[in-house]
Image 1: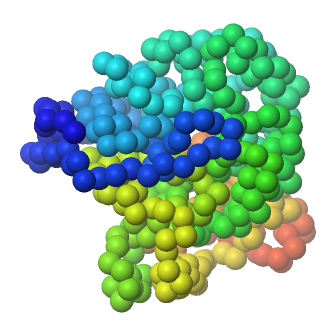
Image 2 (image 1 turned 90 degrees about the horizontal axis):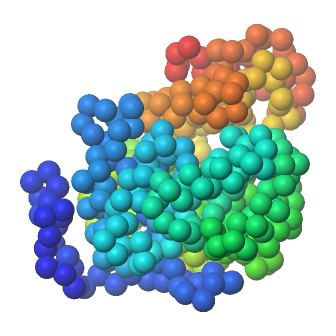
Length: 406
């Protein structure tokens, strides 16, 4: 395919191009060109050593990884306005230079929480076009929709904005990503002529947010499906001691990450599975895994293995919150189900550091402006009166605050 080039050298290892790897492709219902089943997510790009917390991107490594993926058939690149503190879009734009932009569908997102007017939408889109060094965005997503964002954007005329941006050529196809409950998902699906919905979906999240029911609802109405968090932010890729014996005795030898990706790809309704790749080993491994990602290719025995893993993880839940959100809103801004979810994840996957880092960022108030930490609880008890599970919410929040710190 290509002769080896300098940017394929990472950490002393030389990564050769392989002619034997064959990317698989699937269709969106409303799109002529097929899309690679593996999409490159640009939220977890490699950081400069010692600057991981600041999110400073190692641009030479990132450029090599993105171009290697494209040269091996990946044609969907996904970034967003806030990723890496605003650094992702400019770095991706430069990585897509030298002819690579023409080889891919480029997706980025309108930051829902930043919008106070219609003018904000146009200003941000124009800024993104400049950052990405392109005259159009192929897939433009309304980012991270939840109830309060959707209500505000609707009032500000987001659908008219999308119509205008399509008409003037700045974007090609509209879409949305989603983080709320199923009824809102259905409402948004029915509100506009979307190209696709981007949802969180993996073998632990079949009934989370939009879930399987939402996935099928969108497909029945002609939308494509792009999956984010197929490995739950990397948690399902961990070599967790609790599941090691199950995987060691499985009928097929795969890494935890390969089991997770193959489960998502097994669904014929899903077109693209996004992976936020941080190393060249993840890129090469995911591309090799994608070669096997045909729908319906997992056997009954292999699905049983994943079922065992799921049951094992679920048995490690500390706080049995169902995420119904009847306890919300909290008058002091605590995201009660969210706090319990990160606390549970830390124990389920032996991942205190990973879950704690995301917990600290998500509930810091960066998105939405109001901190939502467990330590913000004033112990008024109103949430417990509304909880249909009868959970001791105040005690649980004290445990979360003690575990992750204040």
